[in-house]
Image (cartoon, rainbow, N blue to C red; front, side):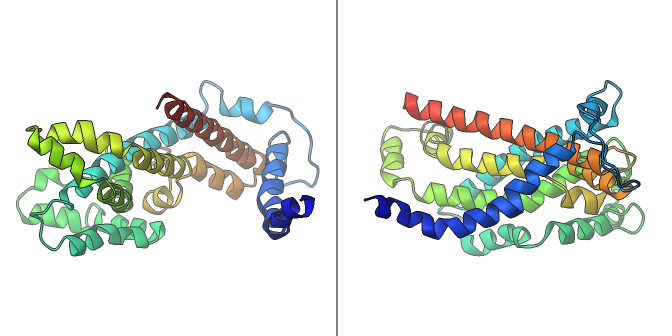
Length: 292
């Protein structure tokens, strides 16, 4: 019996060892270095306690802006991708829509491209003087709508979030479509017999039965949003100024400057934020299962 219990561990031990050496151990060492003054300019590493964390959470710290931008980006893109993805999924599962598979493929296709490629393409399209979007708007007489999309402080962050939503909405759409197709049609047939409207079906049948799918999609969107780097870096490099800077662009800048301790400190702060959020989400899911 003991050998049977140990048998699965023979297969998992190799992957577990690799995970420990390549993921867990570097993470622990990174948290440890966040309590030092580790940098590229000296070989001496001194323990400084919570000094790095104090620099981050000071009242006038620019790092608070990065944390705030990361949270704002996560909240807005998560809501936008979920709402737009759900709306597209509902539309592309209607019987009157023609060529549904082709349209699904077109909407999903940005998901297979890298974030760097998407960012560079949109950076070219949104250029204030040579970009396609402003040329198009001026060409149809809508000069007033032409903007400095990536340099105007008032609209640059919404622009970045819009591009990221466009990139990721197709994935959420596909996930939701899979959930919709798994709902038994008998529910809707009974609702039709009772004279339920589309919005009543949506509120009392579709959304409740899609709850597990929407929760999983939300977890994926939130974890991506908190770790975002590629899209912001390729579009604006965190600028203009620090207007679109997020935690991971700050980490990149700190490592580029040689302040390795501050880079690991910011990474540790992000790790604790993600860990706390995932703990909250898991506990919420467990409590809802108990209630059901």
